[in-house]
View 1 (tube, rainbow, N blue to C red):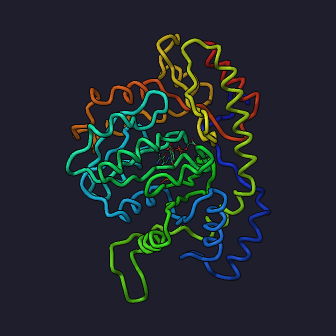
View 2 (cartoon, rainbow, N blue to C red):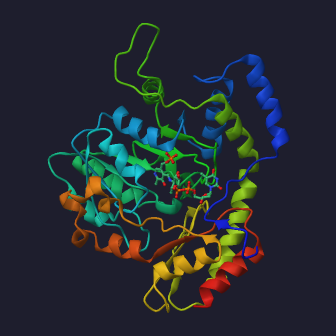
View 3 (cartoon, rainbow, N blue to C red):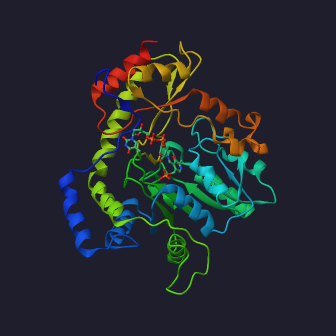
Length: 371
Ligand code: T4K
């Protein structure tokens, strides 16, 4: 690293270009470009195996997968969700005409705090939409209990949680549906892409119809669908990426360790807990909290890093509840979201990707240490 080459918060890993050639040749010769072609089918099969889940429906991106997941479960009314996420989480509710109800997060996991969910339930509540933030598993047992007791569906936004396991089981098996993102910035990427994970063949068939405009056969469109299909090119890239994924995650684990050890000596900087007993993490992000004991503010540190060509991100600031289309909702009041409000004011996600060198990490830490 030098002061002139930028380091971004993430950088997609790419397989060697020549490995793409045979896939391209096959696509060109078969002329099967999309609509559930052979690479699409193959990727669904291998992802089920890799992730240890029953059924997967691939999508063109995670946002359309979220929109479709809510539609597949016929959710209306109100849905309880977290304000501490990427805006796509709540946007998927608005696109379905559903009212988001924001509930506060737990200060350690940064996920929905289960002890607050029940108080947010009304007669109109139909579902809970939690996020496994930065890939850290939600308290799925507590959320399942609440959902079962109150007759609610649970859709997990698992955009950050590719490959994460808890108690030897895929976290994607929790709830009614889980939604993944394969965007360029994710641990596993297909350039753009996403998926819905479900537990029954019938549900998968329904989702597959919904992502293909709602078409069930040449003359039948029994319900409103959308175009959420993943192309053969994206599926081929996914198949290639999978070959390198274990190495990608192993390198990220090393980076995580290096950051944690170097940052532990800096007063006012706290590394967010991302692993714990029973958790197999994916090291998708490296979030730190900048406390009042740190000599300068979070935004000053963010600016200082920027001035040295290190482009971190304040995921997730502002809170979703602060954007204009959400601000008016009663549950958006900062006084009812004290934990999320505080965390959003302290968070910075440091660069995390497998090509990040040891010198880059040293430089980033030195800049943080020198305030
Ligand atoms: N739910 C959650 C919880 C999510 O976090 C997301 C997406 C979704 C749902 C929706 O899934 P998708 O519909 O996206 O599949 C990014 C991503 O666009 C977004 O996918 C992600 N979450 C969110 C947390 O971050 P930006 O605007 O901060 O990222 P962007 O495009 O500025 O990229 C960050 C850095 O990565 C760049 O500065 C440089 C590097 N980069 C990025 C891209 C796109 C590259 O080197 N190459 C690239 O092609 O939103």
